[in-house]
Length: 422
Ligand code: AMP
Ligand code: GLY
Image 1 (tube, rainbow, N blue to C red):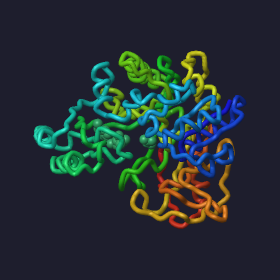
Image 2: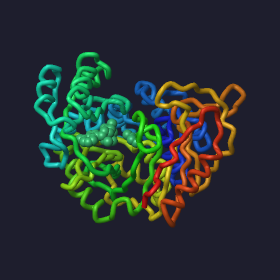
Image 3: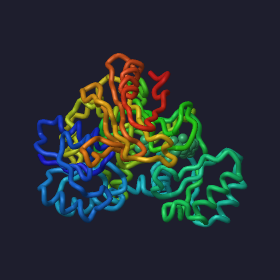
Image 4: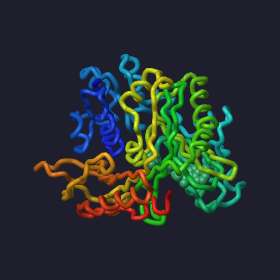
């Protein structure tokens, strides 16, 4: 089978690494890919958002399957265009990707189909939103840009003044462009957060798996929100009973709702949950794997990823095994100096990067310089990932040992990823 993988980050490297282990796979092309992915695939210089060029690329290489990593091309309709040409694709249509692309649409679906989520209201006009904020208890709400805002669209304000600032930023100063023309004001929930992932082929929802990510830039969960500084997954993070419950009260109802709405969901569904004293509630859906959650998760997937992705694309998930093993896995992201604030790139990476089944460094933001030397090319640069059959602690120790050995100017990582986790 010939596969085109779309994307260039740590998530796509992890997916490519796993796909390359399949006996079904004869060739992988990555667009645009990265030097880590080049070990398993040919790279094509086409950007992940360049839908108009990705479709002919898939066609010309006679792709048997296209696996889409990031959300942007899905929201732009890449999967629709591929399906229209009978090219099997792992990733939802643009209509189904609204589950991530429009928070107001996702909330409306959840409310109409009885899926547990915080109360919410949608606004297009600042004056009405501010009037509403003034009627809410301080610290009781969350303000969200409706559309894709590169992980920056959510404010959790402590005071009405901060909430009004967030509303004015989005609706009047257009801080998020079109993505913030509509905002959602949500009831603020409290409790531990959990990311839950399941493959969905329209109707069938696979056995889910849980992970936890670390969004803030610095130890102790302080500093700005980032794309993710690390993640871990373990069988104890969420019991099989709780995962079953999440499947039957959240994931299956969403899959059925999207069929009823005329936009069946095909891909991996990512539910961002808050486990409240009333049970798990959905604070966001994403239409793709989380990054960096995907990196440790791929070390726990015992089944054949290529077989799963093709079964999702062809609606045959009911007959396809999806097994997550009982190991624990941790991913530590090594970032460029002040990331997510301004940083420089182009620094040589002087390290041997391990590449084993239970200890591997995935590339997130790297490139080869003119002399062919590996260099930094982004904020999130590498993801030191390790697993252990024994404990999170052992997996974490291994991941940090790898992280310590990685050298480039300004290299930095959080030292508390998965600390205290089981
Ligand atoms: P997101 O960008 O959607 O991942 O949201 C960023 C963070 O905002 C989440 O990880 C939560 O910590 C927080 N958040 C989002 N929605 C809520 C909510 N309804 N109540 C409390 N915290 C929330
Ligand atoms: N790790 C969070 C995300 O991928 O959205």
